[in-house]
Amino acid sequence: MSSWHASFVRIVLLASASILLVSSAPATSSLQERTFEFTYAAEVHDIPSGSKDVQIWLPYPQSDQYQKILKAKVSSPYPSQILTAPEYGNQMVHIDVKNPAAASILVTTEFTVERTEHVHKVFTDVASTAPSAPPDLARWLQPDHLVPLDQRIRELSAEVTAGKTTDLAKARAIYDYVLANMKYDKSGTGWGNGDIYWACDAKRGNCTDFHSLFIGLARSAGIPAKFEIGFPLPPGGTSGEIGGYHCWAEFYLKDYGWVPIDASEAWKDPSKREYFFGAHDANRVQFSVGRDLILASPQAGPPLNFFVYPYVEVDGKPFPSVNKKFSFRDASAAPLTAGAIR
Image 1: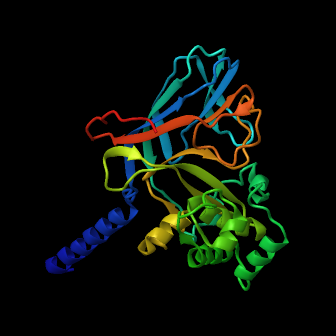
Image 2: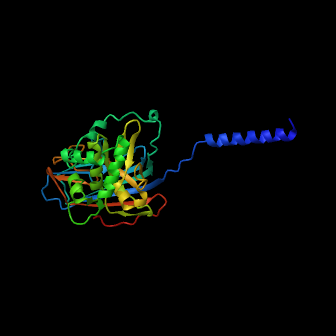
């Protein structure tokens, strides 16, 4: 072999080795992450004189694969407990006040949260890599009070998924149907309860209405689906107040796992329609899961439709006089300025 030919062979071998090394190197993660401080304040006010018992519950976020609670603090003039409800494992702050001396009670919770984008949409993943089915999967096929799975909903689900032979294709057909038939519109009254009949008839509402429709149609098609709720963070902001909650959903594919979707955000930004079928961005914090909730240290009143705002009972009856304020600050932002609790 000539020296030129030997040199050429060595170059080819070195180049091939470099390609193999690059190909086998682990890919760097490009998932969005966000670390922020979240403050949740609730003031129970105008407590009637002579009240014997005040019960206060506030939702309490917890860590999971996509959300880490790094620090947590509860400030209250009375002792508080962190309790866990049995059905869904939701955590909450509970305060039990006997013979309150004042007409108002202020409770504040503060959290440092690290949120990671949840993307699960490579549907060609090998089935053997999927986690085993969760033990509570059957619950996510059952109706909720405002999401019945009656003949009307089953027939609509069958119509929407007609001709689809896989759960993935059915779920996508339902997602597309929700986007095509719903409008994000919070005018007037009736919206915001997550009532599937309202969604079917009015064809408008907020995130609870969008996702009640998705969840009901999915469950009627035999696809487990669950409701999740928390608060949104503005993508471009670094601190400020948050006006209200946001909710989203997940559906379950056998041999693949839970798939995140956010139909209302996809409606608001059509350019992200593909993204939100299989993803939740990092601009959120989750507080609870499920509907028709019995709280830890069970409430005297009926089950809660969902649990993201404070819930209070005075002498065994629901008590609505609660001001609330939610605010956030990115870890790199300046401290928040104080503001009135609404």
